Image 1 (cartoon, rainbow, N blue to C red):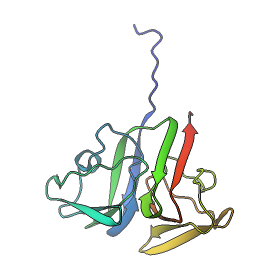
Image 2: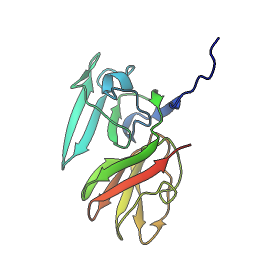
Image 3: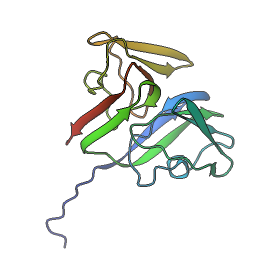
Length: 178
């Protein structure tokens, strides 16, 4: 008989629907390895992931396994080119405590490090005047620009990433202790 069993982890799963073609998505949970083979084990043959960093894209294609097997951490984002509609199930731990996501000046693809859908303001995304985020939804971009507040203050879905065009480097940090 177990007594006084405590867990510091919040374990869960998130279903993220993917449309045929390009999708800006994010890994919302930490599964320990966070590599493509563990994040997308049921990918479609020929599906491709594109990561953007430092002004260039890296890509990986699924041919029974991902090659190369890139890593995607919570807080990062990717373009996922799906050959057909599917739902991907992410399984892992919710990140808690003091969370930091360093965003460079210029363009990057990012997401919330915690699986919450809320406005950019409530997600505490810091910004400089004129910084803009771009969501890719239904094959088109929708944007929000920071003018002291986000206008319009859109909400990313859980498992959705977005481009941010930052005038200077910013640190997106928050304390998350549910």
